[in-house]
Image 1 (cartoon, rainbow, N blue to C red):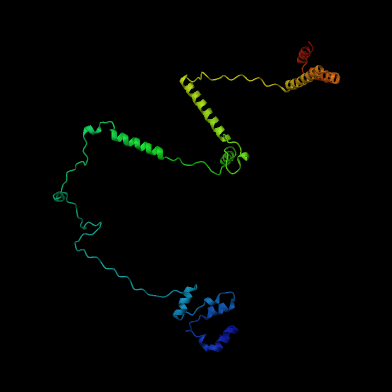
Image 2 (cartoon, rainbow, N blue to C red):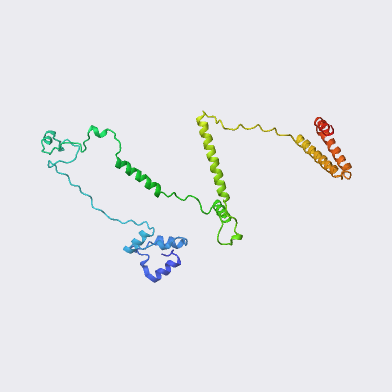
Length: 295
């Protein structure tokens, strides 16, 4: 014990020679290793000499294993008494089904008959009698009179708001005096509905005529060929020519009124300038215009 650290020596002074005794439950070597290594978890070193110490060591990671000597398991041999038992051995007793014996068992027998009987006349179709027809007609009339179609129109849509606005505008009212109320008349939405219905009827009649005449509607109006689209050059020529005609017509009216002398020279200059522009665009058409104006 001379080479033990100072802490062990102090414990020896307090407890006597019990620490170094051979029958001590403490392991002196493990205790010395734990003191030399301060980073080791020293709290896991429990006393192995008591039941509590062994349980604590087992719970907290100790390598303690109990030394228990279990008795040897004894087995008993089975005795063959001749009774049936499930086995693959040749001496096993197996019961067999006796078909002859089973066929002699008394059991009641019943005659299998159909629960429904039909005559051939039942399969011949026949007309409904008066009562059946009347009940069917009454049922249809009841359904037609009691039927209420579901409301599928949205009340908060913009179309509904516009319709209500037209109703308030064109259907009169009692909130304002009669002089301040709009005259009562058809609302625009009613006019649109009538026009749509008329168009639907016209299209339905045209489709029926087409179907009856082999795919051709005899009253159909052939579309008129559209005029070819004018070019930018022709449109400019027509615009200048219309300006010339306007000025000439204005000057003629002023001459008839006796006041043509004031604007005669100015109008003549404007017409001459525009004729020069027409010649620059299309000389052929400009010549025709000049012949038409001065012939």
